[in-house]
Length: 594
Image (cartoon, rainbow, N blue to C red; front, side, top):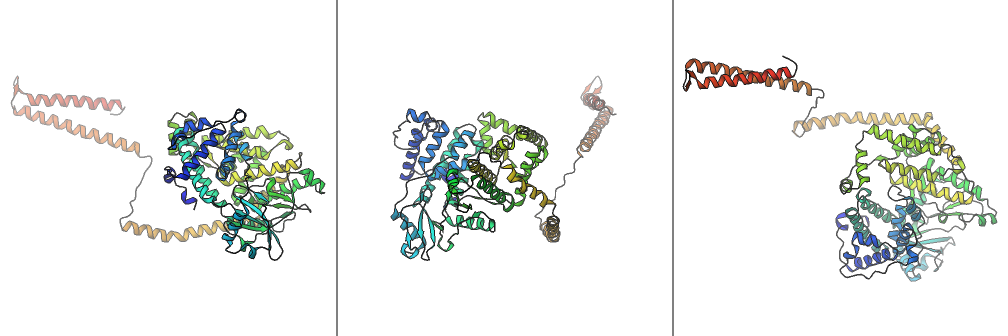
């Protein structure tokens, strides 16, 4: 439903309804409160409302915070849509500076819980049954409350302990309104601020709409959780709560309740007889297995989504964000990391180009450059470079990147920082980075942060090495080679089998007059020019000869008028013929050939 609202035509014309006016007022108040009056003035947001708005400026203490901190506070105050927008942007170093990326990564979405009556109404409405028929007991006090949903403990009739994730009421309506306003603001940014058209904020809003629509359907989260559990089946030291699929709906998700300790507190883990360094190694191995072996990985493995059971098993929670890497992308990512370690510029370049794609020059980009944005102009000029020249420049940048880190001790290398720097290189060289790569980079950076909190001496490279070697060996596996050859052969046979039918369709279209055949014969332009020159000279010579012959006949016939006994027309013909003959001679001599 939300995706249906993602339309620039509709977003560009915000209706003057009461709910929009009220929401605009809330947004403007938050922007002014946290010291962003320049943005309000630049976008002329206060003129959007029919009535004047009393704006209270931020306090001196508030204004002493950095701009990045104040942006985070605005997003947190404005609620779920803006928090999710910040979380989405926190994975986009190609759009935002590093300090703002770091600040947005710490966005909090803790909000006051909704009432028990609203929870009961929401659960009963989704499952179409009274609460007493669904659970033997239900805890009215929430275990946690966030901007999208809150979680309650409960017990099923068979005695199993579960948690019930309940979506907040009226959330879809609020998000739809916020998306309309955000898209309108994105259009204003593109129109009124130099350079923003190149960054395409309207496209970011569209991505946000798709992301929120997926997050508001808990059935998708349940499916991702079940799939993740299947990919981890049989792996020791990992646990995924079981989903009660028959009791899960779009607004309600019910799963097994798991008790455990948070990974955020190493001391508490030690007191429970667990070894944080061993847990860090286990988490790193599990993550590398997800990314480089199965391809299905948890996209948001922060401490709040990771528990540790008494036996040391790691429990994954919250599957609202997961990622999927196909085999070719896993191999390209592995080549990228191998290229960094081996200081191999060619391998780095090939891998990074396989993971990204060249940006196209858009109309929006052209508008941005036309307003005098030097950065946009330089991008446009750079994109006009020969593809080989662009590749050479990219390779040089990647070699410099590798040289900076080549002699750095492994213990000081941060995989997250390396990948973030590669994203910045992609942005400078106008390479478009797909969403799944952003998610995997964020996941790897989160895991590295959790592991280093558990063990300050943690090194992630040794945990990635076995999986990188495995990928290299798999490429040489005879079974893999045979399977690839079989696939290529099968595709070739399919193509050959389609040729007669496609040829028949083409000939039929030709017979019906629906196809025109055009030929472009390269290398014939000089011949065409020579033939044109020869034909022009022949025509010129024929006209010249005709003038001479005609003038001679007129003189012989002594046709009046006469000048000194000679026909004027004949004399004029001889003069014109002489001039034409001189012109033809000069043209021939000029080209160096008689």
